[in-house]
Length: 472
Image (cartoon, rainbow, N blue to C red; front, top):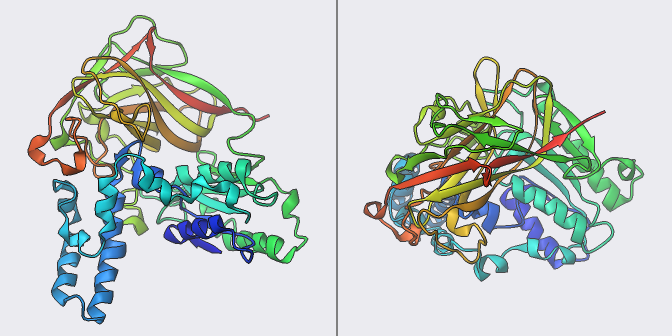
């Protein structure tokens, strides 16, 4: 079996049933988990992708099918098409489930909103909980800016460790500088070069070799090759590796510092390898009605096929906002390869009973351009468990681990490493209302403003945990 996105998810369902005729699979830009990262990430609803997909890729085609069978009218189709054309308005509509234009033909969207916790609903439909039942080997393909990257990487590790046969425990992994709609590696503000496209690596040829080996027992040398191929951005070239994460990974802490005025890139926030001493915390006001706008990243928003708002976008405009904390390192004296999973540890407090914290890892060029590398979010109520939410005690300091997923980027000499911290990334994620209530059911008038504080002192050493690779 071969296919991407939804068709990749279908392969995992079939593989979990282990039919004897299924000898190999090749799912790409997909996930075998449908709570995280498909529908939710860090506990936040993937509003931008989910609403766009449910309306544009399911509801409208379904209404066209019903039109042919005379169970829908042309007016129904026109209404849905107009909604797609005005999807920015739908993103802002509250309550979130007040979208009859979608629910008329895609009722599952209401189910997704009704299950914000990782409960039995999600476990029932997640084949990733059954790796030991999968006997077919899998060649996994993903992109550094694909919203399902975390799922692709988790699938590789799950099959490697728990696959149901010797062959299933020999997965392959290919990750390129791609988004969900862009396979050539040329984005609006960053072109990764001629080697970045799927044509350059002959992805079709790699698939054929995979299937020839497992289906025809062809002696094509596949067993002698390293199983992981990754494109390292910055170096703009491919590397073959023995495993993921890379076996020679060294995790280093890059600490946050400031005198309490890190708001915007005009503030005093810095990053260094030196642990903090006595420092003043930073604070900012998060207003759900004036959310920080999405600017690139691992998105699937309208214009996906042309990456209108995906990939390595320049963050300079976002960094001017007072509700965005910006921490920047000194210029690097030598190239630094950051390859692997990335995590942000924040010591934070909020005036609210629940709020979100976002983190962005950014590569700052000598000319000032600040390109997004990878990012993540955490809904604070899910800091300990996605299945058992716990509200915050206002004013109390908590240690929060924010998953920034993963990357492979060479920060070149003369560049700087930057971290952005905020509390929204809209419309990619739904806005936290800060009330502690059921967000999908709340109206705009229910939203409250939160004052959030980030601590970076010796008892509270907020830091980035970066996977550093030293090549001989």
